[in-house]
Each structure stands twice: as C-alpha cells, then as structure tokens.
Length: 433
Image (cartoon, rainbow, N blue to C red):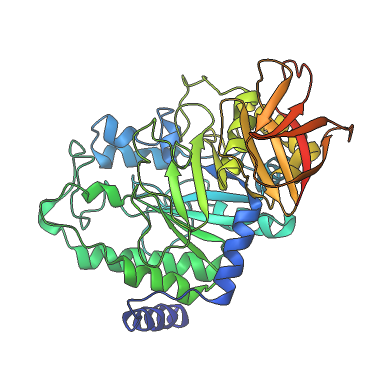
C-alpha cells in the first residue's frame, strides 16, 4: 500500500515538471502506427446503468437523486460475464482492440479502485474486478485494451457542476473542490496504468460539460496527459471533446460521424494529421437500452467500416452489454458477420491509408503501397470512371483474382466491372505506378 502511494506521488511530481511542448516518444509514435493499422475496434459501454436498461445517461435524463440511483449497485450481479467469451467474440469479429468504460459520468468505477468504494468490487455482490479479468484475457488473445475514463462526474460532490445533470439531486454544493477532484482522477488514472498491464490508450470524455462556462474552465489537461505518458510512454491519449486536438493528444476522435462529416452535430472540427477514429453505435444508445432494438444492418456496418478506412480512420463500434454480463445476441450476430467479411477482405482494410479518391456515392478507395483497392457499394451501369493521376498496370477482382478490363482516358481510368448486383462491397484491386 505504501509503495503504491509513493509511486503515485512520484508520478504526480514528474508531471508537474512537464514542459508545455509535447514531444511523443518513439514508443508512442510506433503505437500510433499500430493503432492506425488496426482500423477496427469495439467499444464497450457497461456499468450499473445497464440495470435500468435505459442507456448510459439515465441518471441525468431521468433527473434522479444520485444516492437512490447508486442503490442499483447492491443488486448488480452480472453472473454471465465471461471475459474469454467477450474477447473471443470481438477477436473473431476482426477487431484489433477493445475500449472499455472504466468510469462513466455516473461516477461508478468498473474496477477495484482504492479511491472510492463506489466500484464493482466493493459496492456490488459480484465482488469481481471485471477489468482485471478483461485485461488478462486481452493479453492472452493478443487484443489491445483501451480504457475510457470520464472527466465529468454527476455524483461526486467535489466535481464542479457543468451544463449536464443539472437536474440530478443529492449533491452537496458546498463541497465543490476542483483540486480534490483533479487529484482523485489522477490517482485513479495512475491505478489504471499501473495495475492492469500495458494499456493501448486512455479515452477521455466529458470536456464538453464545461464548454459553455462564462470563464473558460481549466481542466489542467497538460499535466494529466503528461502523467499518462510518464506512466506508459506508448499509451495514446484521446479526448472526445469535439474540438481540434489539444497539445498532448495522440488520436483525434469523431463521435457518430466520419471525419469531414457532421450529420450528428458533434464533428465539425478540422481534420488533423493525428491518427483518426470514429466512434459509432451499433443501434441507437451506447449503454444497454431494452427497447433499443434498431440495430444497423450488417451491410451498413461493413460499408461504414470500409468508408472509415477510405477516409484514413478507424471505426470504434459500440456494444452495450446486458446487466447479466452478456453481449446482446443481435450485436454478436453482427460482429460474427463482420468477422466473416474481414476474414475474406481484411487485406483491403488493415494497414491501409485513405485512397487516391475521396469517398463518392458509389463507394471509396483504400491504398496499400502500389495497390489501390476500389470498394464499390452501388453502381448504375457496368462501368466506373476513376479520376486517377497514377498509372494503372493491372486490375483484378479481389475476391477471385479475375481480370477486370480497363482503359485510360483523358478523364482518368475507366473500369468495366459488369453488373455487380446487390453486394455489400465489390472490390477491384489495381496495381499502380
């Protein structure tokens, strides 16, 4: 215990001396490349909010007394949770990493933290550290583990009130203390990066809770990011703040939209040169909601993954486990189908970069060296004009290596693909120079 406290204290002291200019380490640069090459991860939103089956924002949306809400922990017993089954299912889906919610805005910690008894080991009859089990299984199966961590907190008295959860009751406003809350967060982050092995990324969320403050709120992110990089130099820092990346961040996140798009209203920011990731739900909510059965089709999910790759981005696809610890059957079915597709076509997705042609109504392109993959989702007619500047020396159908006829014109390269029919993704591979 004393050794762990000293470790945390030393880490915080080092952070206080960090320079304002962030210089990523060679390990961090290598981790960024590995992250980009992965292209597909699975997000897990799971906590005691699953007990209410109303999504992860239920405490705020229902305007509850957080003390009454907390009583759900005493009945949280996810007896069907099986880390091996989770990781095996996600690995078979073709995903290369898992991002697990360690603490959401409701303040409940999903690991055996020493900073609060409001956690899955101390506050529930389950008494198991699911994060430790998940971390162990991820290492065993070769899947990277990323950790979501909320900056915002709707229950702790010390947290300065933001624009969300104003209807949540039961908090003592006289006890607001940013310094105390900031220290609490950093001690928890130190636990996560000290006790659970190698972590691929810390995925922060909640900055937006103070984006309307009259006086800009200082989250002291520089020091916190330096703490992460000090504890694990290869650990990537991401923040779902809906802004251009801040100093010290290693990933740029887009929520519910692909880079350059903003249909949902959270992703209008400019695209940086950092590795990109789009997080998206499989149905409607992030956390389990019993009436939310509007799952996206397999075709839609595959095309979304391919389009993300065509924009040079990863897809972090969310699953909200049930209160008993199982992944919903509808989600498992779709993950299985995506895995089958990636087993055949993953070469055109993994370790690729955005293709020469930006996404079009007919589809997208991805590139790997001198190979350009043309992903066609739909096509009127039997020919496709590609406005390419490179020279094409060969064209084949990726599925069976059959040659595809092509000709070069003043406008580019015209592929004669024939009637592609109703397919998820008709892929033509071009050899270029």
